[in-house]
Length: 116
Length: 110
Image 1 (tube, chains in turn green, red):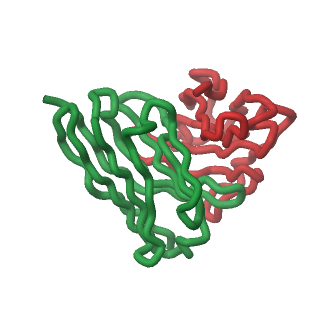
Image 2 (cartoon, rainbow over the protein chains, first blue to last red):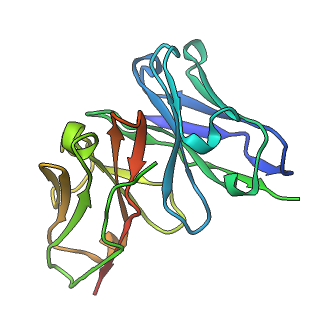
């Protein structure tokens, strides 16, 4: 059974930092592109960033470029999102997800709240 | 980044058929198809259809996906109360180098 388990969310002040993690099991993690997708309270889904199988290619949504960094550790079947200079508008549930041509699995999410 | 176009709401009766649409362009839906997700209130999204229009194992045969040009569609037959949820489509946009999402369709089963 495929499982993606996110952790690292919490309450942080504006301008602060957080590091999210996603632990994968039940898949050959190193074979998949992986994504972070977020959902602000009461809003729709919004893609944040993704990374290729080897960690060599990374893409970001415009509003997080220069502030967020996606990375992975295939030896530990883990995906990360380093978030700096956090803003109130970054408040959301952050999901770890694969969205392949013939694959697709999502975690349960971790809540990030940016507030003073 | 520009998103995909979904109707905000669709209402259908019990046991009827609902077809949800997702409009894109040649760089996203028209290129590699759309992923379809179902989300019940307070729960994470669940994949209903991969971008190649195949269903993951465990997804009901009442669900099917298709694509015509730059528009993707999700059809749910024999609507049941548990089908009432928000539905999202998503596609990789090769010109933006970004995933784009639709705003979601709230499906109500009357």
